[in-house]
Length: 279
Length: 179
Ligand SMILES: Nc1nc2c(ncn2[C@@H]2O[C@H](COP(=O)(O)OP(=O)(O)OP(=O)(O)O)[C@@H](O)[C@H]2O)c(=O)[nH]1
Ligand SMILES: [Mg+2]
Image (cartoon, rainbow over all chains, first blue to last red; front, side, top):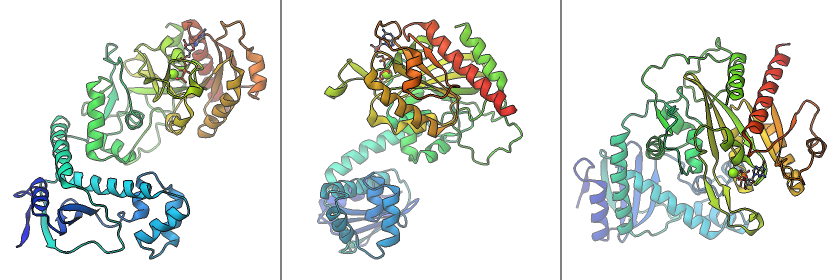
């Protein structure tokens, strides 16, 4: 009866397979890097929460881009104990979101969480039969077969990226090779955001944090940029830049996340002029 | 290694990609897509994410040119792009007066993001129906200190001139700030 153990011995994939095949109803709690809970009804995934807080409808809609910061703040300060279901009705009636916005956003939130669990290699888990989420929560039944397939696919990709890019504490810079294979690269908005932070002073983790990207997402993007020859690693000499910034007496920020060239010296401008004249 | 950034902006089809290509030592990294919306169907492709060009000055210094996407629905990229730039260039298609109002809006938006110097390139001056740079100055209600430069983005020398004028403006601004 007791369905408990550690992911080291029984993986997320195996757990979900079991729950699916046995058509189980209940809640799976995992103590991984963050506490996670997945709820199931008759073998279908219906709800997920990760960490403490940020799983309420307002946050879910905000993360999905359906509410802006201001709207989120208003809801948080005024809505008090309004349940997710009530809030959903209110927002639909007020015309802020549609029913399908809510369903899609909640579904995506649940999937994002469960896919993350596939990468957890360690953590105690426990399945409480017949325990279900609070009744005020919005639940959406999702078939586990497709979740397991997609999760496994992502796990493979994650393992490969982890292998290719084990260390996120290194910085990136643009390649100097004039023959870099820059033809026909299509950059997405997300990739572009990352590109705009490429600077020997920012390591990959910092870029990820500045752009609110997960380790998986940043690895995927950086790997692509590396493959395309657009960026390269900065070798481990985190010394001062060769050309000092205008205000070299300014104390270095403890965790700098810099865009390019916040300030530039006059001599640099002269060099640029000289170079362009001779183009 | 220091990276210096300049932004090349302007309305749809003004010649931003062409401008960057004229001087970049790498093939411009851009995301050209066939155009779907009929309203914007005056040419076959448009830049949907960004243009990205490079001019290496030395082993320790490189200039990057970033072009903004032409279509309005990518406006949210502007603020990200403008961070840390040395200056910006607003490219205007001098033959299409219907875009001048949009050029003005773009220019004013960029000014709110950063107080860096900028110049206006009155592009496509090789066309007989191109409007004069001086007329554009009035239409865009530019202050006297802002340069409006005749430009033909197909011509490298012309593009070099615009870049140089922007750099001169940057130097002038530094002089003013020192005073
Ligand atoms: N005759 C002439 N044609 C030009 C000039 N500059 C650009 N063009 C042409 O104008 C068209 C638009 O140029 P692009 O460089 O694609 O314009 P863009 O601003 O990048 O356009 P979007 O990215 O779609 O906003 C192309 O067909 C260019 O070849 C110029 O100075 N003279
Ligand atoms: Mg373009």
